[in-house]
Length: 383
Image (cartoon, rainbow, N blue to C red; front, top):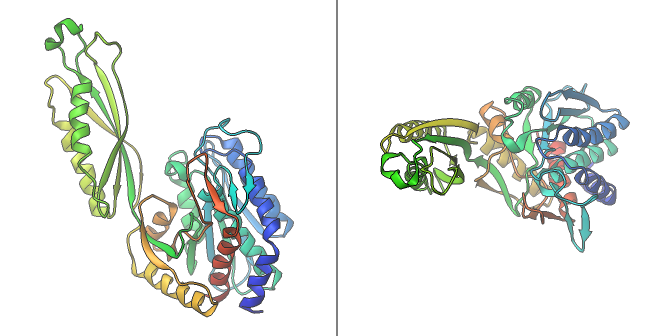
């Protein structure tokens, strides 16, 4: 066995796995569409069973089922875990049938970069490793099913399943979209709060006797939007709804705020700030109730993750591949939960493209092979 042989084996599989990627991207799988997410999962399960790999399905009543596929299950060394998520963000019916297409050097399709490309690259890496006779350690491909909504549908059960499957691994490699020359070892956490404001409705001709929920909400939006620290706390008020008629003082208004934060301490500060902001009324007669809709841990910089990057870069250098620069990711991901669980974790080793969560999302065609190589050489060489 050799690195050179492994890399060549991956290259021979390019068209096979481009077809694999097209097939799974053609299956609509928004997080709230269990049938679709499970159909994507079944595609991976069927392919794994054809190869005789072990498959464990973690069933879910609302979201799709999470999956752990294991190759070399009986090997004695510590496993390496590769991960990605099968769910996407676009509602069913937004795209035509079989929307995934190749145009010149790009592959366009829903979820092609975020994160089906990373999932397929992980499977491709395992296939190539098996073909060259690699049996040194177990390799686990963990497929998440409700990542896009912070695992709200499963009440974080899918994330706990992932952590349990990965608890003894030597490296957890998450397949979120890759950015040329970078590797993610930090991520901001996310807290999404709804502020439900109640006032007093009266006819607009006597508006001075009412209490406008919209006006009170507006004061709160101004305070929330002051958080704009790229390296710390940010807040975006993305949704506001309220009122019933132009000639009625609005009794109800709800705003939804998306906080991003870098540390657990900043998360606690946000929780305290939200409570203080809710208690303060600028308009007499209004009451505000804050509701935490969803949350994610931050992925803080840890010694384990930094040491893993050093090991990976040493491997890449020996393999003639570019070394990667550690970075902070501004979006949330399951890699944060794995870091909190004490698992050595890095992120963004998936496919490379642009416009994630956009109808024009694409990856560069060559990046599927490149991602599989990045993942496979780590599995092959890490000690």
